[in-house]
Image (cartoon, rainbow, N blue to C red):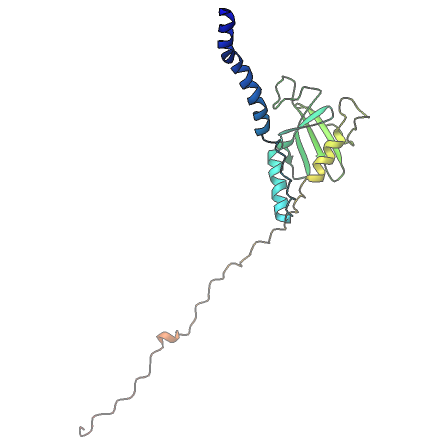
Length: 203
C-alpha cells in the first residue's frame, strides 16, 4: 500500500516530460513555416549595345588565363599580335591542367593566322613548323581540339587595325638671302621740310 501511494504521488512527475513532449511536437509542427518558395525571377532587362560590349569585356576579364581544347591547353591571356597579323601564345599538350605550367619540358608555342585559319607550332627554340590546318579530335589524339581553339580565337579576335598612311613631312625651302635693296626704306625716307620764308620786315 505504501509503495502504491508513492507511485501515485510520483506519477505526475514521471509522466510530465512524456506528456509535454507529446504536446510540444504538434505545436512545433503547426508553427513551422512553410518551405520558402523561390521568388519568381524577373525578366532580364534589355541591354544596349554598349552594355553588351561591357558585359562581354567583364566576362573576358573573368575568363581563366589557360583554356583547354582537346588534349592541349593554351595561354589564353598571353596571345600576342605580330605586325604580320599572326597571333602567338604558349601551349601545353598531354599534361595535367593546372593554373600555371610546372614541368621542365621545353615551352611550346603556337601561331595562328586567322585569315587562312592555319597554325604553326614550335618547341623551345626550334624552328616553326610549316603552316597547316588545325586537327580535330578525330584526326589526332595528341593535337585534337586545335580546330575548336582556332575557331574560338578567330571568331572573337578584334580586327587588325590597318596602318594609317603617315602624312608627308612638311618641306620648307631654304630661305634665300635677300638682296640688298638700294632703295631707302620708307620709314627712313626724309620728310620734305617746308621752305621757310624769311620773316617779314627784315631784309
